[in-house]
Length: 280
Ligand SMILES: NC(=O)c1ccc[n+]([C@@H]2O[C@H](COP(=O)([O-])OP(=O)(O)OC[C@H]3O[C@@H](n4cnc5c(N)ncnc54)[C@H](OP(=O)(O)O)[C@@H]3O)[C@@H](O)[C@H]2O)c1
Image 1 (cartoon, rainbow, N blue to C red):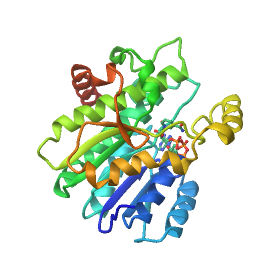
Image 2 (spheres, rainbow, N blue to C red):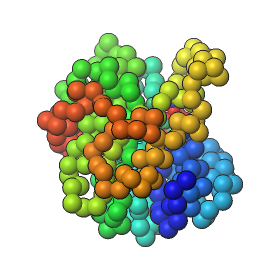
Image 3 (cartoon, helix red, strand yellow):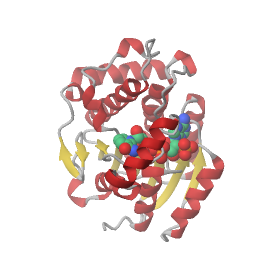
Image 4 (tube, protein in one colour):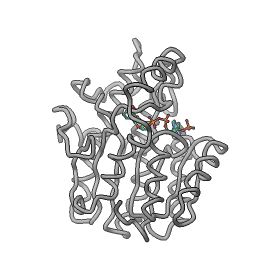
């Protein structure tokens, strides 16, 4: 295990699954961890688990990523609380079979999985730069590979809506975002990468009873545990050999090749500008 003593880390979506195990893994390596969850009770329970690992006293905050004003407030609160920030793990994510429009008429999966982390990251960039060397890890998915291109023109994900396609779009956006961020941070001592955690038995499909039951059955036999699923995020956040290495995509704790669409720098720039416009 790489020693992270003296390092300050923020993990979003830390109340369950991969995020909770990532927070525990960082704490076990000696980092001071701030957990970001959504539900106060679940987040408090997660905080206790992270405390149980030992290491410096962790802290926790809650936010609903579908409310951009709240994400801005979260960034301000983190700036107030944290003297430094060395690792930001954009892990929170959702999948839902139901089309729901959130703020500004933006489809909720895109709002939660892409726009909110983009907003949080921007809010924390100056602190990350001032704390350099620092790392930003964005949790994507290999499912991004199934989308031939990002549908910029349709952030409402108009009918016919398919939950999995909306999720894959958001995960393609995550890889493009991490790449655009890396290019903006060259020379600042802050790296940006994206990861695929593997196929992990978590509650990410909790909005679908059928899928949840199926996943539970399959999960016990074939899927990674959340602890195993956290390994690639931990590798990206902590491996000494990745110091200064930026703009990469990792799976199974190794560098991997994202899809052609995810490597398109023009698409990444367009996403960056679009997110800026949506957040303004
Ligand atoms: N499981 C997999 O096989 C897999 C594969 C590839 C990528 N991923 C990615 O891994 C990341 C973690 O997912 P997971 O599998 O660990 O699922 P999970 O157990 O459902 O964890 C998701 C986390 O995100 C939080 N979250 C969801 N919607 C939110 C919102 N609107 N505002 C604030 N927080 C919100 C959840 O909070 P609550 O506890 O309140 O729900 C939870 O802490 C996600 O980005 C997912 O896309 C997962």
